[in-house]
Amino acid sequence: MFTGIIESIGKIAKMEKRGGDVRLHIATGKLDLSDVTLGDSIAVNGVCLTAVVLPGDGFVADVSNETLSLTRSDLSFLLHEHRLIKSEAEIRVMQRAADISAEAHSRAMRESKPGRYEYHLESAIQHTFAEHGARFPAYNSIVGSGKNACCLHYTENNCKMAEGDLVLIDAGCEYEGYAADITRTFPVAGRFTKEQRAIYDVVLKSQLAAIAATKPGKKWNHPHDVTVKVITQGLVDLGLLSGDVDQLIKDGAYTDFYMHRAGHWLGLDVHDVGEYRIDGKWRPLEPGMVLTIEPGIYVAADNMNVDAKWRGIGVRIEDDVVVTEKGCHVLTANVPKDATEIEALMAAA
Ligand SMILES: [Mn+2]
Image (cartoon, rainbow, N blue to C red; front, side):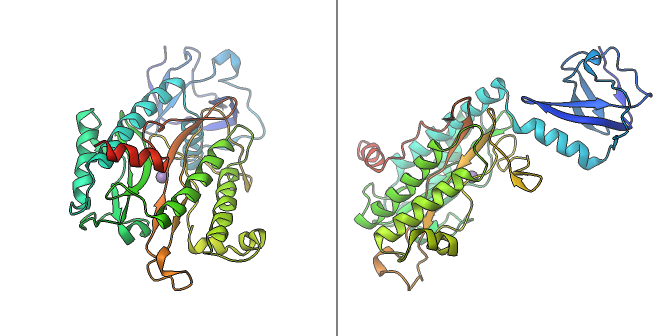
């Protein structure tokens, strides 16, 4: 069993990826790694590496002509690739983080009413996290009612919530080091208006389509492209955009309403490490990757290009999914997102 600290591992001859394992082939004569066993940890310059290849399998490899110099960034890359593919044990912890966060969102829906402040809902969420042992949020919770929902990084959370407004909550706990990241948007008083419901249903349709499109082999940007298509079509159907859908997509017309990407890697960090492209091209999804799917539509309060009835409506719906062998599994399914289900939950509160 290797337990010592290696001051320097000199050179990495080769890095390869098999399944979820990043394998280091170390090419240096300085180290005696003959006692290393699978799973042993090795500290190198303060960074912990875990042995994933046994010595006989090339852990101490032949020195290749193509040796790479070991640099800090080489190590980061290796570790980030390792973090990107979650083990079953990691998924179990992330499921718990998701369940706690889902419960917090459901509680916020039940406790919402006109006249209360955004921070009341934030405190209900923080309390739910903490009472389940997730003492800290994974990021600053966003509770934005009315036009505040259109401000993507709103964290003041200090406005009084009004009858007739929506409230957007983006909040997730950190549990055992792992992050959850959920967004739900619901009516402060429990009933969507016609316009709010119309926008909401377009966002939901785009999110469900993106989830259905998330599977191994599909490129990272595929779910995003799916959301763009559904949202652009929806904006045309509602009269917020006009023209040919394909042309509007080419022109980026939707970005007045949908100005962010559909998701990001999730893990130990809420915006977790891992490359999105390999050699400049979007990388394919693989089982064990965990990502968020979070399309939105935000109609700015001062958007004079649309009918006044749409202005100030902001909706985002975000779930966390793990890529499986055949598709993906939604970790955050325990908080409702269908508009009718949300209204029913709030009416029963
Ligand atoms: Mn997110």
